[in-house]
Image 1 (spheres, rainbow, N blue to C red):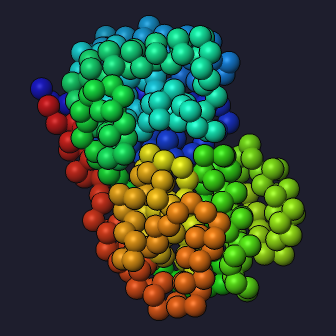
Image 2 (image 1 turned 60 degrees about the vertical axis):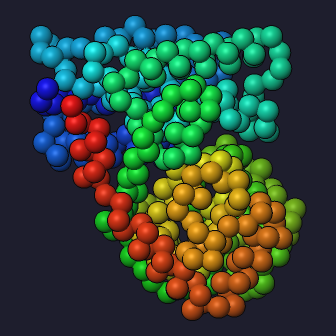
Length: 347
């Protein structure tokens, strides 16, 4: 079958934009550039209270995208939960992530699922439905091997990882190895910006920390900076435009990115394309598919002391920072969109 028309499905939390949203928009743009007639279909998603999760999944199941305006739709691509519940005879999934709180985050401080009858019941229902809906897909892809591993572990389903370049790939460039560490990402608990702040207690002056991004934890993180008496060494910039972000990458000493069990992590590849080494943690998930300790970055225990020590190592040896950053660039530059589009749209 020749694929001509493609619909990409997105579950959007209103007023929230992160890696998953950039991933979907980039996919739509790339499909269009590769000659496909492409449309984005979006529905809002709300994960609280937990009673809302299954109705939002059911909303996707009610939708039949086999045709539109009397013409067939050749391919539907689901992305994250619950978009792959949609009905179509040629449905594939390029999975960013499932409802993580019900899966690998359950039992950690990053999940709101407890051992109550209701929570256990909702979690079991989500996992069972995911297994059925994802099994319907003609092909299953994930954005990283970490996501594929979760899918096999929890749902018994295989998937092929497909890596794609970050949003700013074509614009990033190297620069000096300056006097600051850069943290980029949403200010949410699972991103562990607090780890970066606590690590600064162990970082030698004059090295400072610049934090880019916004989120629900910003006020708490700013309070923590005050408590740690680091106000003169930590700067919160909030959201910045692309030009400023590119310049910040270019001038950084190193990029500190140590989330908990990340799916993929654009930040890692953006750092490498800026020829910057990455400091990450042993439990950071998807970052470990790219960061090699002692080669293009540092993989350390998720403790303030260990992270601070890693920063100091680069601060005292900028030649090493440049060497590691160069190795990271060689790893990241091989990732392209062409192979992704070919695999997803092949019959």
